[in-house]
Image (cartoon, rainbow, N blue to C red; front, side, top):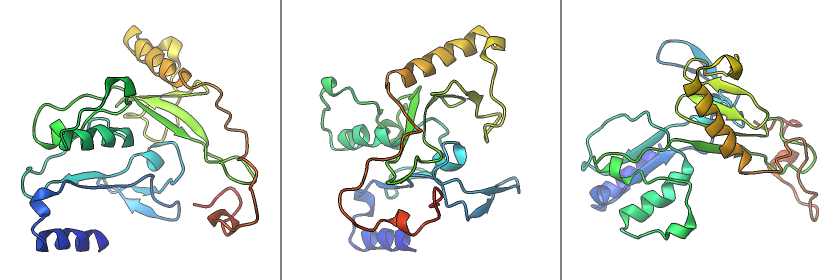
Length: 217
């Protein structure tokens, strides 16, 4: 409803065709929500879960009536927004900034998209009293995903990540992908998902004071 109101206001103000409108989410839906998928199966939300139920979210981009509707299945994440906005405003980003993201702007305007080979995911919220139960770090391609603890999955064939791959039995091509993903994760050392968050400074309430322990979702 609120998204519809924003769209309507842009149209009323004559700015709909002058606005790149992006709708997305920072994580999956609450575990209390069960959705019916296109094939009829039911899937429970996974907010905070590092698997697809918690990290695969809608990304809808509109630019008034200037772009035709289409669907893209390539890899994208939040780090892509900065270079996208810079491109849209025709601002050059200094090379020394070494951005992780790639611009979505060419794809938005119908040009050849810039490919994003690997996406890095890090989730380790500093909760006040206990470690986050789903704290993890992983790198992924469109098809494969590697976790900091060595787990490796084909997420296209195993969306819920129930069957880890034995890398020793893989082809040389898959082993090369594994090494790339592991190297990306290893660039960020000293990950301790078993450590609780830093102590609070002062006595103030947060959302976690009113949620079930270790399960505020």
